[in-house]
Image 1: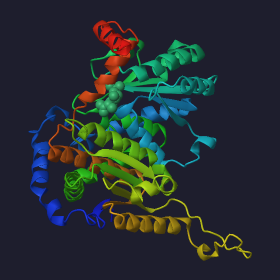
Image 2: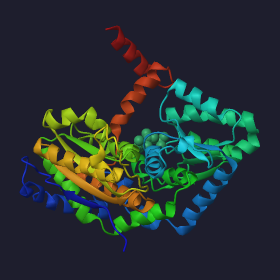
Image 3: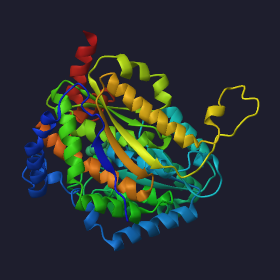
Image 4: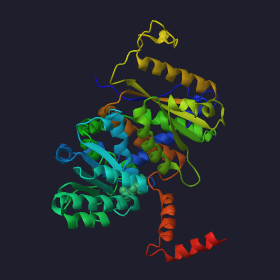
Length: 442
Ligand code: PA5
C-alpha cells in the first residue's frame, strides 16, 4: 500500500500554547480551504496550482520527457537559467534525489544552474567549464524580463552560438515563459526555440509542477510522472495534514513565535528548505505581518546555530522534516583498539545514529521552550517529494488566508529592482534615479 507523508505536533506546544488555541483556528482553516476551492479569496487569479497535478495530461508529461531525453543525449551539461520560483523548485527536487557527489562522477548529463545571482565570478567560472563542451540551455522566466536570468542567458546564448553555430544552438535551447507576453517569448519565437508555457494563473513559487520545474528535473534523469502522481495523492487528500500545520503555526505566531525554522537531518534537503523559504516568505511576509521562514541543516548547524536555538530568544518554533528510509546502508565497523571510544556504535547503521540525534534534538529543543512540529517523509523519492510539494503549497494558501494576507502576490519584490534600474540608468527610470542621487547626497 502506498504510504503518505504525515504531519504531527510532536510535543508541539510545549509550555507555549495549549491544543485549544490550535483548535480555535479550525473554522478559519476550513474557510480558507473553501476560499481556495471556490476562488473567493484575495489573489484568486493565481490558483492554477490548486488542481494542477490532476490536470497535467500524460501527453504533456511524455512531451517534457522527450525534450529532456533529447537534451540529455546531445549535451554533457544543461544549464537551467532562472531565479526565484523559476529556479528553486527544480533545484530542490534535483538535490533531494541526487547522489551527493553526482557532480564529481562521470557519466550522465549534469544539470547546472545560472541566472539566480549576478555573481561575475560565478558566470565566468561557469563559462570556463562550458568552453568547448556540449551544452544546452533551459531558460525560464514567467515575465520574460527578469534581469538576473536575462544577463545569464545573453552570455550563454552567445557562447553556445559561437561554439555550435546559430542553427545547432537553437536546437539546444528551450524557453519556458508566458504564452504571449515578455521579451523571452518574442526572442524564442524569433529564434525558433522549443517552448513551454507557464500558465497565467500559476505564480512563480507555485510553479514547480509545471514545465518550469518538470523539465529540469526530467533532464536530471528523474521520474516526473512519479513526482506528479505523488502530488495528485495529496491533491485528493491532504486537508488533515494542512489543518494541523496551518493552524498550529498560526496559533504559535499569535503566541509570539515569529520565526519558523525548517529543520532537516538529511543534507540532500538543503535546497528543499530554500524552496520552502521562498514559498512561505513571499506568500506571507506582507502588510507588516508574517512568520519569518528560516532553515537549518542538522546535525551540521547544531554545532553553530544549536546554541541559539536551545537558549536564545524564545521567539522560534521548529518544523522538522524527518526522513524514514535512506537509499544506502553504511554500518559503523568495530575496532579492536577502540582508541576513539566509538565501539558502542559498532554494528549500528549511520542512519540509526542520525535518528537518535534527531530525537535527542527534538526532545532537547522542546525542553528548551521551542515548540516542535514533525513532518515524516517515508523516503526521498519522487512520489513523496511530490506529496510534500503539494502539501506545502496548499498549507501555504490556507496559512496565508488565516493570517489575513493575499498569499499569491509579492509587491515588495519590486522595490530593489526599481532602485537597481535607476542606479544603472535604465531608460524610463530617470525620476527614480534623481531621487536616489538626492538621497545618497544627504
Ligand atoms: O515567485 C515569484 O513570482 C518570483 O520569485 C519569480 O519566480 C521570480 O522573481 C522570477 O520571475 P520570472 O520567472 O518572471 O523571471
